[in-house]
Image 1 (cartoon, each protein chain N blue to C red):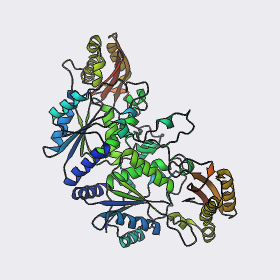
Image 2 (image 1 turned 120 degrees about the vertical axis):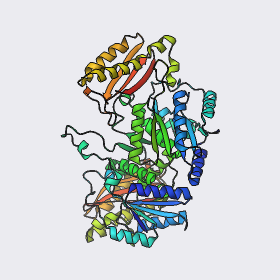
Image 3 (image 1 turned 135 degrees about the horizontal axis):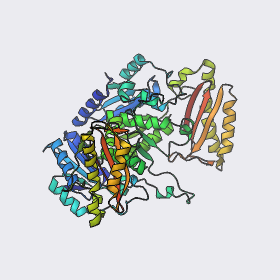
Image 4 (image 1 turned 180 degrees about the horizontal axis):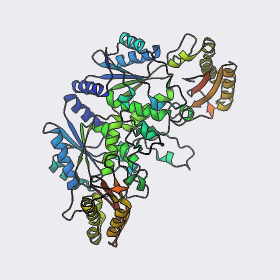
Length: 300
Length: 300
């Protein structure tokens, strides 16, 4: 496995592969990898075959974190990530620095106290204005603009034929798919199923933040999804979403450390909220457990 | 010369060229071509050589026109454009329809009167937030977002190694260059000099709108640039830009049909306005002659 840290070297490599007709599979991550990521790598391998190449990237992208969020504390363990990637069959691990990804970022220009500050810095963003509005977009207003921008950058650097995203970040996958369609990126999007612990908790790098007690209570997200599914599948009529939300919120918040950020029922294609919930609808929820914000989703 | 009207066919062709290592030169235009465009085509040819391919596109992109602007009346003459491209050595002329470029555009979703409207439409934009702010960006607030978005789309469809833009749209070239840098498009940007009529008027498809009298008065833009250049080059000290602006405005508006929209002096790298003008500064101006808005620029 080759480790590449420079944008120019990664892009050169990708352009060489293109010239040779080598298929490129790509798994962008924030690192601190778990079996969920590994399942994406394996999906990428199946997509490009033995003769293709699989690139994974590890980059904790600052523009998708708000100033109040956990950017500085986001868990990192590069030695372990390298081992996991090597074992999973990654060909190239792309690990750029902030300086590589945002070379022109002019911190001075962000400081209004400096009279000589000039906007010579980074100034281009990709924005998605429909699917990104609700749920995570509402709770984290600048999040998706950071995601679409960095994914566009990574796509232009890695030039993938296939990119694999996890279904755990359902809205993210929908937003990136929309970007790929609207901007005609020559990339096939694959969304791979969420990997779960034995008790149903979705794998997430942020699970590391949980204390033992919080870890137990975190299963509430999965239980809420299951309860909603059961309710919808046993009801003859559509259920008012307000009622179902209230029930699930109550269920979740019986755990002392758990506080619901949002619960939403929506059309999985358009992400438009549904007033009445029936089979085929999608649920997504965000719950803060202790100080850790967890998300999950599922089809009902 | 091959004419391609489908996005999918154009992208397939481009991917084939990539696989063969063929260099792709690209000249995006709004059509109604003149010798300025032809000079860009020739520049593209010189960049990719005989064994490369030159693609020109003709697309009057609706998202870069405001509702009040001349989208519907923008001059078109496809038969003539084809002939000019063929003669200039274009290999592929890409002429997509709106339906090809914005297939998901949901007109219904734009109409708030329709209760069932769903945002299934086009929703991804590329925005540049620094260089695009002043001058054209101030006079035409949604213009550059349309430009960066459509250029990103075209780059993903045509996959050029080299793209050639005209210096006449100086700010546009700067904004697109910035986008290419910030998003790491694997594209080399070339900016080719403005081509002028014998009396100095910059070639523009919009010159077609001018009556005979207006055409005579339109030379005022070029004369203003020359006067500014002369003033700067003969002055021992930097000249306050407010004074120079007032003089040029007066000069231009002695023509009865001419009204200044803006005159700006700025750093050609950052596009930041300069309070005092000296050699090396750049001037850009927009002047409405009759009903036709013309722009021009030059280095002082």
